[in-house]
Image (cartoon, rainbow, N blue to C red; front, side):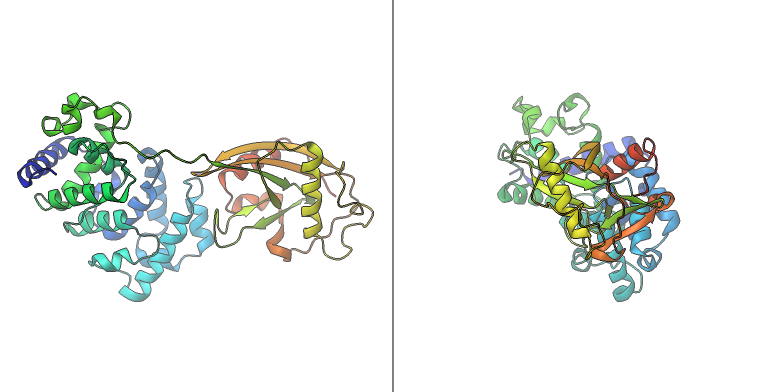
Length: 382
């Protein structure tokens, strides 16, 4: 472990560099804890240039914690659309409801209280406490783990709890040697501009003289990680059902992946074997059965549920990669139906006019499919 003197020099040198080289970013013009929390939430796994316009629009709509807390969740999710990782928006909304109800609409200057807010982890709590309140609270994310693994010469995988504790301890000692808000932002900035993942710019690094990774000649190899498991793959069979200028859609449950967002009626298949067209049609037919109520779909159409169907047309396909999951979405349109009468409140399903689909919050993969299909397909009245 580096000495206190070494970490003191590290902190002072880093802050001096930051004062000269810091980028002008909108969230650096404020110490308002609400705005800091909004920015840190948006910046999780998202590039700075992507976040900036969303940050401005979001604060224009919800300038303070109470304004966000009072907003309808659907409106918040719609404003977040395109930024991805939608659980962040839902948690931020719920967190501000706690702030409104328990703290009078002001984020408290208390690390434990901030950490207890929905969706706020150790890194985000540390960032809010150090940047907004200037408290010496370490904020350790992936960028910081990379920078410190190199500086400290740590070759153990950074996803190991022991490695994270070692790095967090070093950051905690260093932040006490400088102005906390400047140190936290300086460490982030170094990781964003200089100590980048693949080709660290050691020649431009203000703390290169003390970097053990550079001294070993292996800085670019750091940090190390334990091997990732292969992404799970799934085939999604989605149904495109129109009636009188409206499209049948359904809302996902309030828990789990893409919680509360809208999608086409679908069924999920494990992507172990490659599926034949008949197998996809059969899955679609079974999903259609679940949507039907009583005799609302003509009996002769659905009379052979266990045989590969031939009454669907494949009209679109898209792939989407999540962190640990990969989707292949195949959209099928039923053909040859005379009547389809499905209750709008059945299983979360709803008939939505084509012109109003954009008002709903859709996962990115469905945004892509809708754009493609609505620009290429005529309206099919079933």
